[in-house]
Length: 248
Ligand code: FPP
Image 1 (cartoon, rainbow, N blue to C red):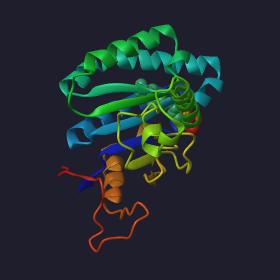
Image 2: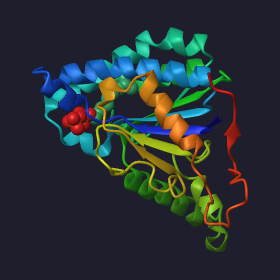
Image 3: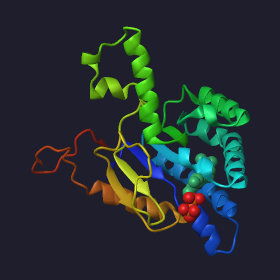
Image 4: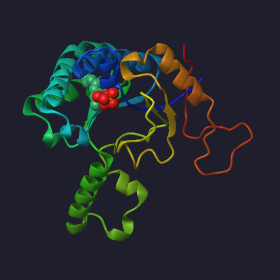
């Protein structure tokens, strides 16, 4: 099976899962954390090199204060409780997004987890927090303009490649596969620049229900895709820039 080197996931449907069960929305987020734990472990074991999870969007700040607070507190608990799993599996944690907006306690906790795991050589787990792709592109442009004004880069040298280096995702490859759960079929301001040639996979199950079987179905579907990157297809539909590994 051909695995995506970089898998990105829009974890959607926590609230609806809970509401259908007559539970508060927060219960859905709590169950969603279990799915995060399982998917992180599974992807690391399979050999996925980069896993990026859309955990809190720049638009999610508009949710009721109680829900925002609960999500932040779940994140804090997750960071504490998962350090062992991250270390045992050699997982490196990274964060993308406008981190200046996060509560100080969460920000400190993130810094600690990122620095503790930075030498790990296994999968890179990236949490997108207070993240919006348009916002990321604007922040990248601001940083680029500062360097242009300082004479560090000339306008003629701005290319797709040099611009990418100003994005939050500068150190990682573009996602090969983007999964969104809950039946919604949109990108919702996630990795817009990076997903130019990403394969999209939508599944109807809610995030708390996204189990090993659902992940396997998504990976098998991806494995059968023919990626051309705008070029002419080869006879065996060889996937460029792909990462081949035997999966269980
Ligand atoms: C979308 O469900 C999910 C979120 C906005 C947050 C995702 C958060 C988690 C899975 C838990 C915390 C994450 C980590 C990494 C510890 P929704 O609330 O939009 O669901 P709905 O569309 O059914 O309302």
